[in-house]
Length: 639
Ligand SMILES: [Zn+2]
Image (cartoon, rainbow, N blue to C red; front, side):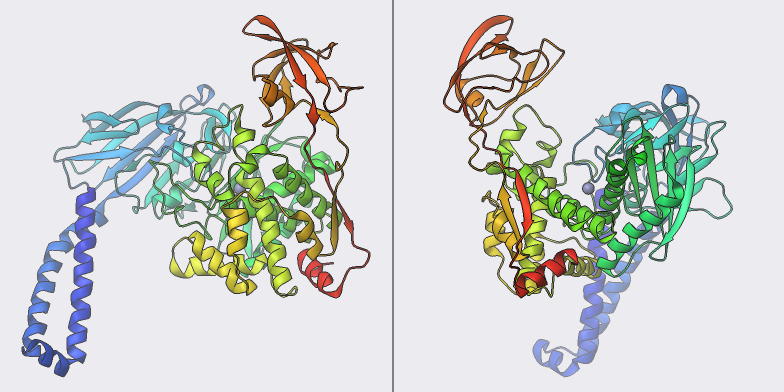
């Protein structure tokens, strides 16, 4: 069914609704209507009734036709060692002579057009044994001419060999099926449900997914609509699976790749994270939840889904205290997303447009606040001390202050341009942009303290998050920036216009000392007054051939013209072999000669050293903490 027909149905349904309301209105207001229209009430009522009946006759067949369209998929693996999955898509109940199918161009949660259709090959369509004509209309769209046939069978293969949490990967040992890169959908039919049958490769015996299993049918699942299908990755292979209960929800952990983890310990600690996150929102909206964990020699990253997540981890990481806590932080981050971004979501992020960029200015909330809450959950779960908590947050604050791009790009702009900046960094990114993760984490920290300070420790950012979650749940819609601000103002009881101007839409210097003081914590810059000479370049490359990879805005290198790509031979007479020389004996204002090779030509560039502008923030408890500060501290850290 095409867009026009869908629109017609929607318009007709709206007219029916209006007619029904008018009928009821006339029915209960007979006298007034007679006065106004000077017509007998009964006549109007009958006319409306007739129009309504006619519309029903016209619309119902369309609705019935729509309801009959049925989609199912079968996934099998003929050549997993060569990284292919064989996809069969069956569409039944077609009412037109052609059908368009599309593949998403991006995966929600990862804001980059990835062109998943680039991995598709061997597209064919048939009806029974009859081959059907099919042609490609766009980069991600195929048209199948089914004529009078009501059902079509589409077959295609997908090449999957990119290791990441948002792209599919298949080899002889397993298949990770990231759904936006595997499943096509019929144009304009995202509301349709579908069935997915997985036929594991010989020797594989498990399927892990958050999709609903079909009773009595092995490895067969249903999705109520395409938003759910596209939000439910599938792991197929021989993964190790363990389960735990937390917040009344069954959680399954599917571990691919082995690793030095202790399931018993993980069950206890992951449950603590789940409980801490659920405590903020007062409810856990899932019946079950699936963690798909990919353990590699060196792995990382995560991608959130509606009731599952995919995590990258390092096999040996679990064995060290630091690595173990890093993993728990990742669990905390991705798990929190089941509320923040999946349900408590910016208005632009769902229902999704799978063919284009979906723009929002609120990733600083969706990602930044999630990064901030990672720290809160680690503190509240007892995995980190209040000192470690403060230290991590100040590390984030320092990171933003030390990013020249934070003076150029606001949190809202960073969110909007994620598609072309954050996900497409270049050598100048640090000078021109700020991460909405880091800046958002800092904004979350400041807003949390602002709310606690304003309410004398009675409220916090937790209350805003819960209220906004409930609001999104009741309206069924995502929030606008204005709605989020309004809720934060309602809960804090103060105007946050100045806060929004400074930290959300502006690039105002972060008033870290003021905010930490709310909780009785002194913050000093350990670098203050040091006046350390600094070039402002980063180097990388094979030993003896290091080249500049970044030049920091307004640094000595920036001012005097060192370029990214220059191979650095020596600085101030000191040869550059494997790292940047210490500039020992040099001071701010000294001129050093930097010998470089640019485009294979030797050059000497005189550089006047400037002071290192970076801060290094160090916290200490205020010895004379007041009762008001104590209230904020208690609300914030629980101490
Ligand atoms: Zn995230």
